[in-house]
Amino acid sequence: MQIPRGKAGKTLIPKVSCLIRLFNSSKRRDPVAIHMLQVFLPLLLQKPSLKSNNREHIKYLDKRMEWWKHRKLELISECEAIQERLQTSFKTKKRSDQKAFCRLMVQGQVKKALRFVDHASDIDRKHDLTTDIKKKLKEKHPKAAELKQSAIIDKPETKTDRVIFENITQDEIASNTKNLLGSGGPTQIDMDTWREMICLKSRGTHPQTLADKIATLPRRLATNTIPHDYISTLIACRLGPPKKKDNGIRYQ
Image (cartoon, rainbow, N blue to C red; front, side, top):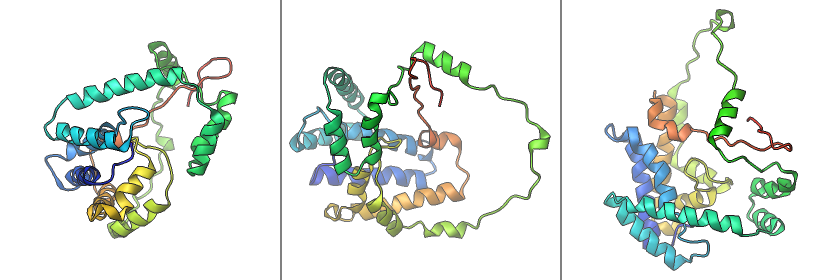
């Protein structure tokens, strides 16, 4: 869902800033802060139904914020129930590729729109990730070879002065966010929603605070040695097995 206007939306943005701040500055919470951020946004902003309205969004967002605050597992079970219902409705609902293409083009989401153009050529179809498919993908993956010393270049390490990353500022984050387009990344939240959280002046001072915390995040990643486990969900890549025309598996 889009972030509702008013109090409900204003309470969400500070929580996002808080989770990023925990990673930037908290030694006790930084091992889990990024992981919490990755699940917080998709859980809190899951639409209750395909045709839900703003009033329902406010009601559910308020309830979920309380659940998150008090660590209630009902938050997870509710969103799982929504996903199950949506999957069933998507299977039975016929979508018009032409209408979807026009809608996405108007929104400026060209890459998404082009998927509908290629849909007829079978490019976008994927196998379900079953045990058998996983086995075939592993068979396609090349085995690791032993390291050859001749392939190693003996060259002094090039050091980058940390001061250059100070150019990543709150203003730079806000300015670039206004011009970016794209679908959801690890948080599954697209740029339209991030733009609302970072650039919308009606949210008071919360967008500026969020932009500042986001600017601190890449500076820390660029200038500190971060354990992989701390950011594994941030850099993870979810691969899908596309179908070939002969129903085989395309490895990518």
